[in-house]
Image (cartoon, rainbow, N blue to C red; front, side):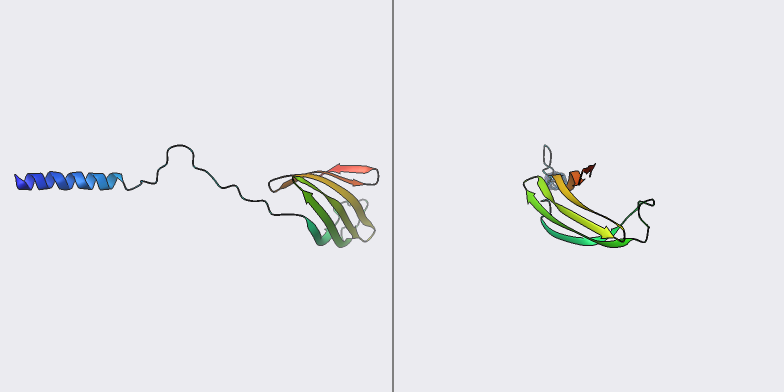
Length: 114
């Protein structure tokens, strides 16, 4: 009788331990941390290469620079890019959604979506 009781007790104990194996299950949705966007404000420098084969020679490469100001979700600033006979000086007016920027670039009377 003692053996039967001991066997039943051990089986019950192992059953309880086995059911606790994945005890980190949470009911409801798990919260995923939202990453903080990297600030884009400040000076930026890079290279400029045109892909417009009619107005620019493909080898017309040069420097580009931008000075951006970030206020909440709005990003504004100047973008200058010149290489050979090609280039532009644009005013940027952008909206930020996490790590995506969208808006317009204006150079004189021309405006383009970015």
